[in-house]
Length: 99
Image (tube, rainbow, N blue to C red; front, top):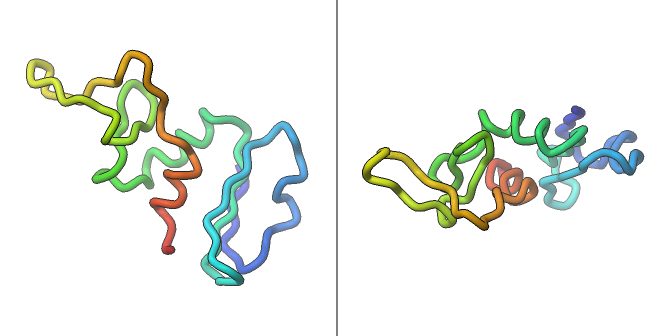
């Protein structure tokens, strides 16, 4: 994993087609954030400690959008939809950014 907080994209950004790249940017702000992950599992592991818990939830080893989950009163926890998709990594990054 690579991470940089800087105004312009780092040299390593989007140079390897086998990696996942995400960014949260606003013009040439020094707070722009640039991410490179080896795979989704690495991105989820990194973001697990950073996502806003009013919008996303950790369920079953993945990060889900709260709107896609159902609260189960018996287990007193959230349940993933059977055919649902985990949250989009770019959306999680945008939710955690300063912008």
